[in-house]
Length: 135
Image (cartoon, rainbow, N blue to C red; front, side, top):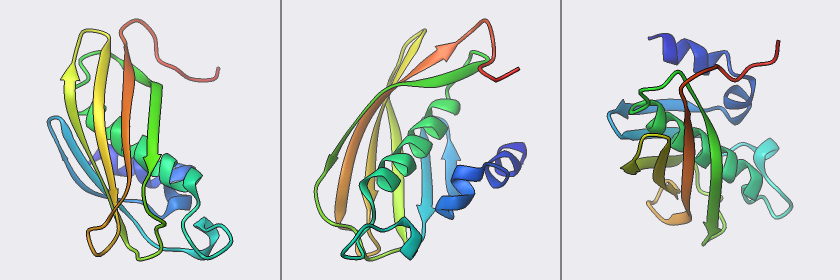
């Protein structure tokens, strides 16, 4: 419940129009709508918006297995496979390896017809000694 409230108050997640669909151990799924303000010329979703959604989904999947006190995205690689314009879009993230300090996650970004538009793989660093925040 607190996570949902934190997501609703997150300005970037709100800008995306994100909605949390599923969060269980090692797995997350979010939905984002098609909105003109998320598009580049040609009315297709901007790659940066796709990457941001992938980062959110991967971070949530990591959060579900995080036994530390915080986390940060350490590395994120995305292959853009198809132009995305048929929303809403679903982003599914699955933990494929959890270590003591790093979690590796595979993420799929699909359109409303199930077409794979982007594939991501990322590493999230588990922080055990201090929260990441501006003082």
